[in-house]
Length: 239
Image (tube, rainbow, N blue to C red; front, side, top):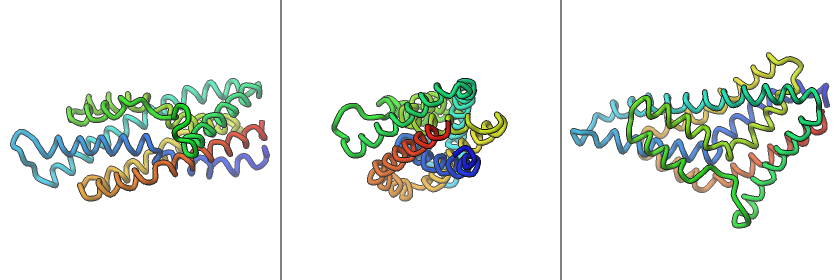
């Protein structure tokens, strides 16, 4: 397994980043942000606005919001990877991390198959309110602060995937390679959000995306949970 580890890490990082980028939390919160931002920009002091100006403003503020989330995730990942990398040398903590990732993955699977049983692994209910507040203020500081706070508050959604990826990256031959993969993961993670932002800058497309998210978010949860369990088992076999 150690011989195959370098070959499977890159595909695992890319696939996990893409799927995590459309996870229910990130997807839903971005749509809420875009909806509130559109409503704010289209009802300015004059009561109307040029369509192209509104779209450019939305893309600009939305990009700042996504970058804020990216930097928050990356900073958390760098800190956690440093800790995991230190403890991985002792193997036992690495196995505990993998077991914890598997536990969170099974929890996500429970949310898919038994949604009404027990607590759900999801972000706090205030996340949607924070997204709307940041969008309605429509200022760069408020958007940056909102992206940072939302990035922290959505830990329950992405924590399982991130933890599994970090344990996998800590097993890389060099720290530089592990951190390079970490940056790649976060870049891939925000790509679906960028695509969603560009596509959702018009109201009809926004409605279609919201409809798709409503009917597919549980399947995304299933894919994330299954992937985390598989990755955690892979780490247990490797270390």
